[in-house]
Length: 180
Image (cartoon, rainbow, N blue to C red):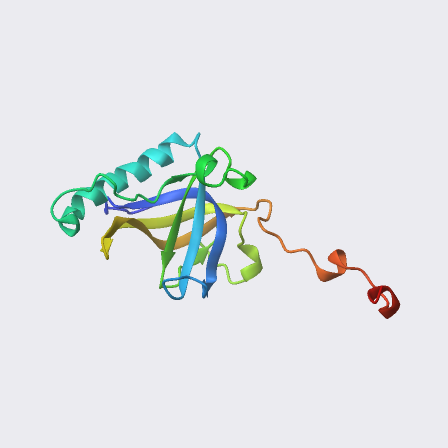
């Protein structure tokens, strides 16, 4: 059972996408970070309400970062997959947000035992993440971000963005065929 007393912290059941939980994403524009895109079905009203409640609390807690008032154009992390990723089936009928951290998350199974095999947790599986929302004001760019805490895998799912092996993609070829 969760022992959460922080009103800006939420345990989010979701599908993992763009998951970097064992090694940081080195391509991040903000330096190396562990990250996940959390995909939440729009039908999961309870989770969406919990996220929005935490976002509202974050607005109150961080108003001082925005000159004492909440900007009307404040960027919030929760986004609509139907609008922002219309061609990606995994995001259809879902909301999503990105969470990241410079600190490596603990990754556990449904019995809260550490997962050491990196192949066990992947983009496409389902689980829960702990997230703490925070306000930012960087060079006039104001919004609310999501700090990734820990990750709990609950069940397998269809792998997202699976690579095709070179053997399946190419097959054998002779030099004569190549030169044609």
